[in-house]
Image (tube, rainbow, N blue to C red; front, side, top):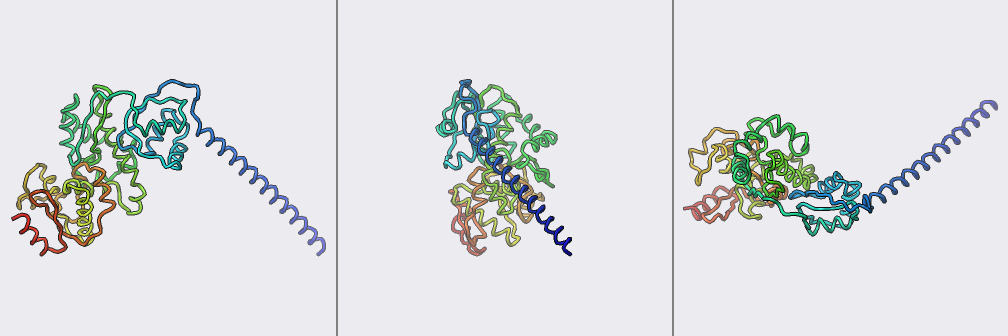
Amino acid sequence: MFKKMKDRKGEIKIVRKIVLVVALIALILLAIGGYFAYSYISSALKPVNPESDIKIEIEIPMGSGITLISKILEEHKIVQDARVFKYYTKFKNESEFQAGNYSLTQSMTLDEIIESLKTGRVYREPVFTVTIPEGLTLEQVSKIIEKNTQHKAADFMKKVTDEAYIKQLMVDYPDLLTEAIFGENVRFALEGYLYPATYSFFEENPSLDEIIKKMLSATDSIISEFESVLIEKEMSVHELLTFASLLEEEATAKTDRETIASVFFNRMAIDMMLQTDPTVLYALGSHKDRVLYEDLEVENAYNTYKNVGLPPGPIAGAGKSSIEATLNPSQTDYLFFLADKEGTNHFAKTYEEHLVNIEKYLR
């Protein structure tokens, strides 16, 4: 018995020694890790090369968020670490960075870089700009590209409908372009994914690839701002852009977008068809000033007079206001709305109220 107790005591001493050694090693590693982390961050907050006066040209695309801006700065070796720059700006509550082309150096401090990006000091004027308005289809965008560049509309459409090319883009924009763009009955995979904005070009003949990627990058940047909201609402990017495209085609003012969004959500909640005329026009593939009753009967997946829920994909390019309204709709009980001859929308909770509005504003 005494021998066993003695052996047991010896084991306890050994265990204690091992625990002590392991604890010391852990503390040492923690201290070393903390030191290296502190050193790394301290270094990343300093200029990349204080002695350099070589100008590095960069472009900040329209609609870029801080995540994309930080990545661009790191890729051009203007900052040492994109994450450090990103959180540095957040901790200092810096925002409202300007799109454009800049001439920066590795000797600039983070504060100097921030100041340059906020004031929008550009180093050269663009050769030309192209404006893509909200609410246009890919085919309409192709005509604007033809009018403003050396590319034909047909070539643009061929490029944006090339499945092999689109799959390459999916690798570059994995969070934006998902398999949903190849969903059943989707007319054009990239419909609604090219952001409506004014784009600057600094060479006379940019390639179609460059033009398309500029527009996709802008969409990607806008969508990234709402990543957490999408997760919270369990909404996919494809659903967001599809819903927003309907608002873009129906609404004229920001308040209208939010209220129309509530109408669509209210209808979807009770499996009521959305019955929005722009989807009929998209299904027909033509523009009309007035949708006829016979048009409503067209058998097409995009026709929301024939199908419950959202159409297979976006029907146009939506702007930021429509995207925001989709994610933050008004809270109403409305199920109906119509636009009068002046374009003002009028809302109703019941079909009877809607009929009164028809008599009052359309007869």
